[in-house]
Length: 247
Image (cartoon, rainbow, N blue to C red; front, side):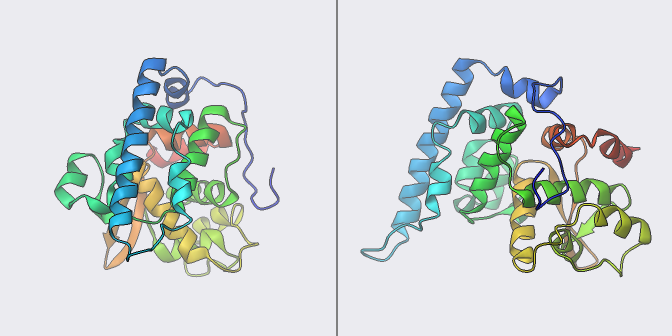
């Protein structure tokens, strides 16, 4: 267990969970085809990003987080199992709203943040093996989202930012505050807004949450039926809490 999160990994061995099973058992042919498709799209994204640079300019060093997807089997297996269109993800900033919707993405979750691609690679490796590194922020945010969603359906941005800080939740229900308190990343003093935004957009683009506006407030609704959320709940030992969302 990391001292940065109270979330532990309950299972490191192969477990009987549909999403994990589908990732592990994707055929070599499917994995190879998806890896090639991802590699080709990353080269296309490189060309598009490069075309926007001033003469002599260089790509952001953070482009390496996307290039780390090339030849990564876990990413290919995640996209196959979750039926994620890699073009919609990799070329996300360059596709119009109609194209994104056609490919299963929400235009409200559009992002060009290169650092967030590291989160996707890590969660793919973590889900498929159970023993790969997954940053504490990801574990904390998902765990808080699961327990919070038992109490409220809509989680606004101000609340989810406090998943990643020591700020007390004095303005929400006692039940919600108590549930989140067990998992809050109280060690974080800066960066909560940026990390929470990355997490919302990443989870939305992975089909795990739905971006929603309610009374002018931005936030999200958890999708408990999401294969990724179910797999993470299994890895975290939080299956019972997840089931309470749909109850």
